[in-house]
Length: 257
Length: 67
Image (cartoon, rainbow over all chains, first blue to last red):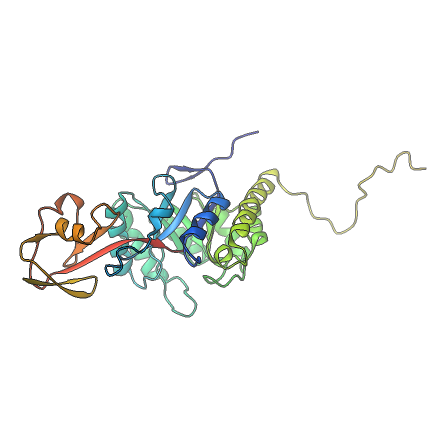
């Protein structure tokens, strides 16, 4: 069987599941969930160090950046300047150029601001960043991002943290068909089967945070997503049977008594 | 003495303190952090060369959990 390799910006990933590290009860649970998910890439945020409490635990104590790929994200940024500032700091901190760009446009929907996103992508690519871009499911804008040099297109399934699953399969399918860079569904996935559907459609990967962190048992849900993504990918590669309007017997007619 | 703003908080430090010394005071010298000094990102190699002066604004950031 041909080996199925997943590469983003020339980085080989074993898992097609990327997980977020926000919203967990504590760092121990974060680390356990990441382990159960089998992901080798996690998204992280950039924030001020707590200078008052020196003993407060930090993420890097629980998730070793040498063993797992940290993907700095600009979550919480509402314009290009904030996003660029965040990612330039992230590059200085980690020394890596692969980042996730997320510029939001509205506090209630957390919908991507594509005007600022396109502007930021262009600048970041010029500065040598490899940019994975959170975006709307508009095929034209997704194409534009690719033209600007995005390393991955990350359309939303539905609003961030909503758990509503894939709301616009047609657009996601068009984006998959037209893109030469990986398409990773980011945001809105609610449960394991949503991830399987995305993968069966031919997505290259999925990014999950809330669906795992907000599950009753996040560690178990992380494992569910691991299997869901593998299943969906296998199913996509295997190629599903054709749909028919009427029944076809599974057992031969010949020799019927 | 010099008054600086560290992560939005006003603090007083001794004169002629470098970024490296300040990080050491806060036990952050061995941590994965990035520094912005008056809006400009300072490369790690320059922490020992950069002295802090009155009214300086310093941002020290790190990676935290996020989606």
